[in-house]
Structure formats: C-alpha cells, structure tokens
Length: 256
Image (cartoon, rainbow, N blue to C red; front, side, top):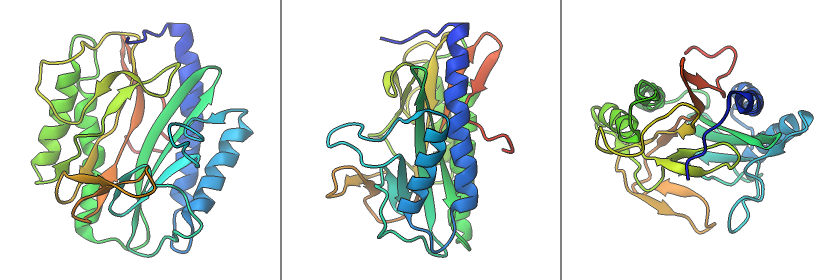
C-alpha cells in the first residue's frame, strides 16, 4: 500500500531529511585517504544521535545490519559494512548511504565520494550517476508514472554504456524506511504506479562502469559488481507536492 502524507507530515519528513543532509555534508569533509569506514560510521552515528534521532539502518533486516551507514568502496554497489579493516586510499571511491528516523518518519540518501586522485573515467561515472537521478527527478510530479522515472534513469545511464543495476531499486518512504512503491532504475515509460501528491519516494540510481550483473558477498549484505569494476550510487528522499518535488536530503551547500 502506498502511503499518502499530509502537509503536516511533510515537516517531519523534512526534519529527518535535514539530519541525513548534515551527515552527508560531514562525510564530504571526512572522506580522505587513511580514514577507515568504521570511523565514518561513528561520525554519522554521533551526528544522528545529537539530534535525538535514530540511525535507520542500524540493526535493520536479517541478519541485523551492524552500521549506521552503508559504506561501499569501489566495486561494492551497496550495503557495505563499515569496518576498521577497510582503510580508504588514494584513488578509491566510496558510496555512503545513510538514513535517519525521528518523530516517526525517515530520511534516506546516498552519495559517492572520490578519495584523493581518482581516474577521470570513474569521476565521470560518479557525475553521470548523479545526473541520472536528476533525469528521473523530472518525472517526480503528479500525473507521471514510476516507469517514467525509471526509463529516464536507464536511458541516460545506458547512453554512456554503463550497467544499470536491476535487482536493487528505489522505494517509497515515510513511516517505514522501505515501503511501496518500488522505484526501479530501468523500465518502460508510462507504466507502473501513478505518481500522486503526498507520496514520499527515494530515487537511487546504482550505476556500474561495466556489467550490470551483481553478486552477494559472504557477509550476507554487501552487493558488488560481478566484474570487479567500480559502481556509483546517488539517492535522495523526495516529497511529491502540488508545487513540484521537494528534496528533503539535499545538503545546504549542494550545487543542484
């Protein structure tokens, strides 16, 4: 069932999203060679708790996810588990996915950051993954369908020869972190659930430099590219309103 939020509930969604945006702003500064993904997780945890909020991801799912962020390095697409043994080095990329829960509502967003000096083609992957989100955002308005968003993401990303991850999707969000409808990053325009005012959704392109095939690692959480090539991830929580979409998780200094 698709949840329809009231204007009053928008304020709670905006509050959760603001915390997520603060974490992402802190990540942008903290991500550098020599930092462990566990250190990044601790930073995120402290920021979320400083607002009397709860990390949406911590202890989520089966087996319970052990971190406040998903820290996915290089060929890890999503759900990388923070670890003191994973030390960022020059030339890496890291996707940080984070959620915050406060007053009964969630915010959820992801960014991929370059660590030091990164190969130009990988930097382009990061930038184009972000742009594929904004191509999909054009259709996050009443009267369109989920398939319009999905098709826009896929068409843009595949125009560069990238692999669009298909088993993992965006999702509805509100009282629950993951709820209806699913928002795939591929599909046919004009199909799927109709976009209506009051919906909260997360659009989150996961785009690979090589194949679209992915594999589950032995930790039962991390999803990685099948060919070992890098992957990028970009996500925001979006409120559908009569005046157009509102991004609740955009950093204040973001260049949108």
